[in-house]
Length: 85
Image (cartoon, rainbow, N blue to C red):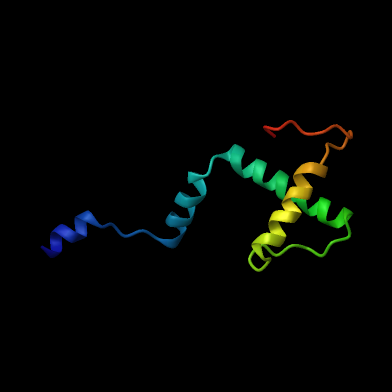
């Protein structure tokens, strides 16, 4: 029985697990997340708001802030973003 468990459950290193989790997220998704996080940080700074710590901000406050971001955010050219951006 012990031998069966050894073959059924492998041993991975922390580095292997980290790489597997990292690779599970598509490259495009990582780039888009980085872009929008940066844009959101610019929005917060432009509105003279304190930096947002997502781990402690109350959900109702975050919802209001994101609502304003979605409505007010524009491209650097001043054009509105498309809904699917």
